[in-house]
Every structure is written in structure tokens, then in C-alpha cells.
Amino acid sequence: MGVPPDQDNIPLQRCPDLVIKSDTPKGRGVFATKDIPARTIIDICPVVVLGLEENKEHIEKTSLYHYTYNWPTIDVSGKPKTAQAVIFGLGSMFNHSTQEQNVGWIRDPSRLVIIYRALRDIAAGEELCISYGSHLTFEDADVAPATPPEDEIEQLRMIEPY
Amino acid sequence: MGVPPDQDNIPLQRCPDLVIKSDTPKGRGVFATKDIPARTIIDICPVVVLGLEENKEHIEKTSLYHYTYNWPTIDVSGKPKTAQAVIFGLGSMFNHSTQEQNVGWIRDPSRLVIIYRALRDIAAGEELCISYGSHLTFEDADVAPATPPEDEIEQLRMIEPY
Image (cartoon, rainbow over all chains, first blue to last red; front, side, top):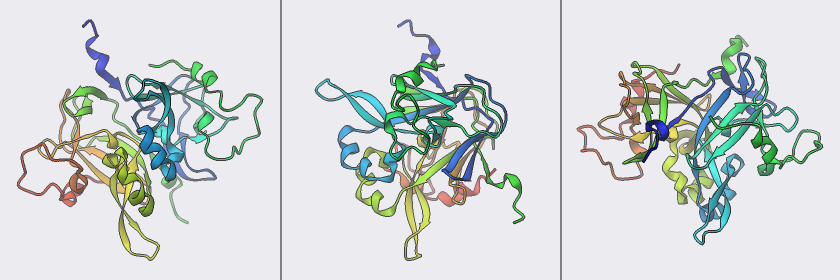
């Protein structure tokens, strides 16, 4: 078929210089133990996409809803829909910060993974934060930024997969 | 308190020599790209423990139930109960094999992580499989083993945390 032999091998890199701290003001958080250069892959996380119905009927009513991500999908009638996905990796552990966001992410729907990269140089000791964008399920603790936090497109443009 | 300063820093090691393959007979699976020596840490996965009620009311009715793990907890009256936890890492991606199990795991309830280790030398190209033990939600494809697959204790004894 002309597909390179490793096309189906989805890498699972994780930056080795990360720890979780349990006792932060935001609860658990992911922190750098060494300086991490801009564009370093932080984590590649497999996802499971939830059914639209089961999500609405059940997942939205549980604590897990705070952990899910929007995920583009197509419903049974062929219409594009926004489903929810559970992220099996650090993507479920990063706290939110609009102001201090230092990790960007991009969905790879064909491979069912999300790739996380450092948006800038991250210093040892810093917390790794993403922008939850339009899926923020709590009040934003940061000062309101000039651009709306739901502008995920801008953020997604900042990284390239692999 | 006499606690070492790094006691709260929970490591997040992942073995770098892993990929996901999408097209296996079992669906997605995790495979070794290089030889992995026995006892190597494969992944350390943070978990989120679900409420007993929300699990029964909702999660058990969704596709996510196939991904959850038993998790020891204490209910509001102080009685030990088995809750369910969602595993944010490769623990949610490993396929089951009673016969070919080459990865063991141990819960660390105080740190809310599961640690996965190679139970034996794993050769490049091998699939990494765990035993789902008592949480098997489908019929076991392997020939019935001499010991019951739910004997998780034996498996847990095979690895030590960190």
C-alpha cells in the first residue's frame, strides 16, 4: 500500500524530567525537575473517545467530566460533532493557566493520541500548565486575558505533531 | 516532619522503548521496540479514584468501565470498599494475557499512582500484556491456566514500588 512500515507504530515519548507534586494550591500538578527546552515533547497520550450518548447520559454527571477533552467526531448521520475523550496520560494531570501556559497540545484523531510539547523554555521547578480552552469546567483563577481562552486554534498552531 | 524533601515528588518514568500498534487482533496494544530487561519500570501512571455512587450509577454503564481498575478505599462509614479508578497512562492501554503476561503492576494508594514493571526480560517486538485479574470484563481468550487469573496477590508480590 506504500505505507512506511513504521506508520502504524505510534511513539509514546515522555519527557523524563517530570514529577507530580500532590500538595499544590491546585491539587496535584506536574512539575519540571530539570530545564526543558522549547518544543520538547512532554508526553504523547493515547485517548479513548466516548460515545455521544453515553457521555451526555453518564460521563457529564461524574467527576470524570472535569478530565475530558473535546474531540472532533462524526455522528451516525454523518454530521460533524464534538465528542469527549478521556486522555490516558499527563494530559489529564496538567493544571490550567491562561497566563502561565507553557505546554501546547494537538490532537491526532487518526492515531487517537494527543501530543504535548513545551511552548517555550521551561525552567527546573516550574509547573507545566496547559490552557483548557473551551472545556474549562471551573472559574478561571487567572486575570482575564486580552484574548478569549477558548481560542484553541491559536494554541494549536503553536505546535506541530511529531 | 522528618519527611525527605523529595517525598512529595512522585516520579513519572516511562520506558522510552514503547510504541502503540493500532491494528492488532486485540485492537490497540503496546509493544517493545527494543529489548527491555526484567524489572524495568515500564510506566508510572497517576489515577483518579471514582466515587462509589457515581461509578455504580454512571461509569459502569459506559464503555469506560472496561478501562477501570479496582481500587481499595474506605466508605463514609469507615468500611473498606472496592472503588474503581481510571488510570491516566499506559495502564489503560495494555492488553490482557494470563499466559503471556510480562508486565506486573502495584497500586500506591497513598500517592495515587500505579507502577508497572517488566516481570521478565521482554524482547523487541513483543507485546506488553498485564493480567486484568478479577476485573476482567470479557471472556479470557487464553487457555484456562492452572491458577485462577483473579489471584492478583501473587502478581503484586512480583514487583516492588520504585
